[in-house]
Length: 228
Image (tube, rainbow, N blue to C red; front, side, top):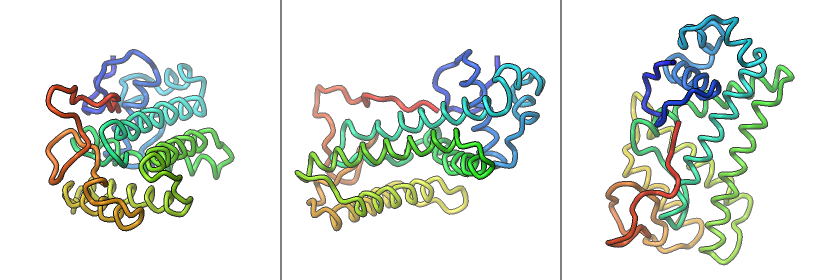
């Protein structure tokens, strides 16, 4: 079985899309989009390129399976922020999160390149994942505010969240996680008029302010676990 050197696959899987996705994420996070070739994936899995093509019914089936699997995991991760928070915007907190966040923009670039070449399946997966996160955030904000945020407010919040995730995950000059949380809280407070203590974010660990997390005796584990 493919030996996964990265920690973002929490479970060993024999599923061909899981194995291929692990290989692609490893290539994306070490070499970028240009590294995604059938030969490179085959070498990483320790099989032949012909075996990869046969197993996935060609290049298009391979990319569709990989992008579909990763975007499903991305949604699984981002919506996990909603269970112990007022505003369900998730930032990367550990090495597994960071690897996923670093792979995400490159996977989106890969999907955009496929779409420009007339192959829209990968881009459709990405668009569906982005829409699901946006709707998840809108639903939780509406419950807190008593009304749905405007499309412009929602779009700006999603853009800021993406930017902060990328800054925290930056390898050369990362933004400290606490600073990213503070900036996000300040934006939420200024935009939606929530008191600062009501703009707290979901976190697995200690925060620098009050949270809506569980009290003593309650289960502190998130209802959705992030798997890359």
